[in-house]
Amino acid sequence: MRSLYLHIVFFCILFTQPLLAQVSFEASVNKEQVPLNDVIQIEFTMNSDGDNFSPPSFEAFTVVGGPSSSVSYSWINGRKSFKKSYSFLLQPKRKGKFTIGKASIQIEGETLTTNPITITVTDAVERQDPRQRMNQMQQGSLDKVHLVAEVSKTKPFINEPISIVYKLYFNANVGGYRGNEIPTYDKFWTYNIEMPQRPELKQGKYKGELYNYVVLKQDIIMAQEVGKQIIKPLSLTVQVEVPTGRRDFFGFPEYGLVEKEYSSQSITIDAQDLPQKDRPADFSGGVGEFAFKVTPSKQELKAGESLNLTVSVSGKGNLNLVTLPTPVAHSALEVYDPQYSEKLTPTASGLQGNRTNKYTIIPQYKGEYNIDPMEFSYFDLASKQYKTIKTDTIKINVLDGPTLPTNKEVAGVDSPDDQDFFQKNKAKLTFVEHQKSSYWKTSLFYFLLFAPILAMPLFVLISRAKAARANDVEGNRLRRNNRLAKKYLSEAKKQMNDKALFYEALERCLHNFLKAKLQMETSEMSNDNITEILQEKAITPEAIQSFMSLKNACEWARYTPTEQVNIAKDYETAIDVIDQLEKQFKA
Image (cartoon, rainbow, N blue to C red; front, side, top):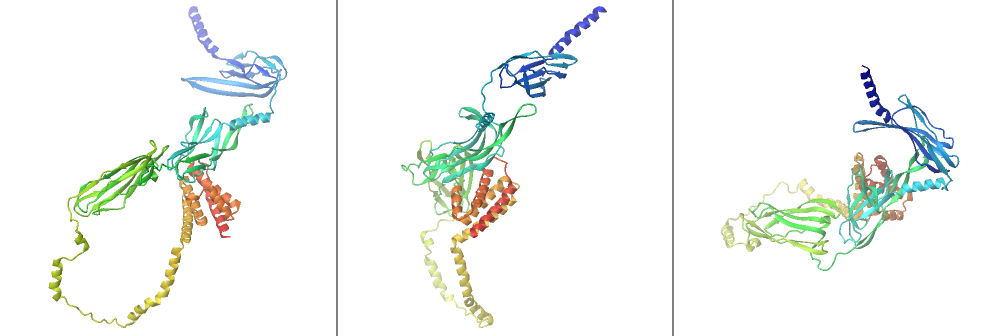
């Protein structure tokens, strides 16, 4: 029995000893040597919760922060772990070598202590003005944000598609951003690629350093004029998290958001003219890589039946600007206006997809007829040469139907049989005298006789008014654009629950208002042109600024992935801005 008791005690001691050994209570410092005018952080850490924590005496130091405590739990492979710590920020009082004594705590009924720590305090070091140092720290955070415009090519051919991507690189915490000025592409054809409302966070290198980045805007542009054109920068205000220089209750640094305006670099595009040498006479304007097909749905049919002739261009490049050839067919084949369709997808090298004209052709007479060969010419970017794709003659065999009339039949010459018929039946022709009617010399007769004469002056006045209005090209255009402006503003009001549709309608309203008041076309509506013309019209700077800010808000909301918009406010602003400008134009 005694032997059994000893074995039980032995096993209890054996198995509880590792459990006791797992409980720890330790002290650590962030540095063991510190200048007199610096601070150290000392931390007391345990892996099991305890009570009655007693810190050591810090007689050679001044406590400038703490005590602060933290507790954390974690589960790894199904096992729970625990960590609790107390920390202090200490500043030395004098030079020398000092020992920080033991701290103690009670864990599971047992008092645990830490080992003493020796700290060496050296001479004070020269320090910057705290404000200057803080400014440098804040500037360091702000310098980790970059707004960049990346262009695929700066010396394209005219009408060659190039891509411009605007990226925001950052290695600091960014709280948000809002647009200030969006670039315009005067003398360029532009395709704005729709961006997701929540941009995807990606990683990439900027100047050899790894950064986080988001794509804000991407456009496909094609130069419409030869020569150098400058694209102004994209500008936005970014909120960046920076240190404030203050510490919280537990002694940890505090951070706040600072706004700074960032701009991408200006881009110079030097568009080159297409070679004049070997340029085909029927050049379609296509620049890129294309295929061309002409396909009939059938080549044998009856007169009166229809066939479809599909004329299609596919590939990648400036597909939206190419001219599709028109088929030429025998006059016996009646060709109707085409049904147009397209499927275009924007890529870094331009628009990719196809454009198609589908013609309906109905033969009128029996026989065999031709659709002439067709040609499609384009400038190939890979070889930098013009290429021409030719199709074969398409034969259409009409199996059944009336025959094609002869030239004499088309001219309408009477045949001898027709003349004999007239001579034989001439004697049978009689003339019937029209009986007099009671309508003669009645009131209705005289009214109808003189009514046109009396109505002639009124008709002349109405005709002249209509002619004057029809000849008033500018007046008609102004009235039409005024109606469009009102229409689009009411349309914007209907779309206030849809951000994309609202700002699209609002931007059309602003464009048509300018068309009506300034005789401007959409292609002329660069920010500089608008501002200059409004100034010439003696519009106040405040009204100009309000209009331009609203125009910029529309562009930013439409072409960048942001939810930081105020639709109700922008709608009210549009009413006020148009009302102000309307009054000043009339003054």
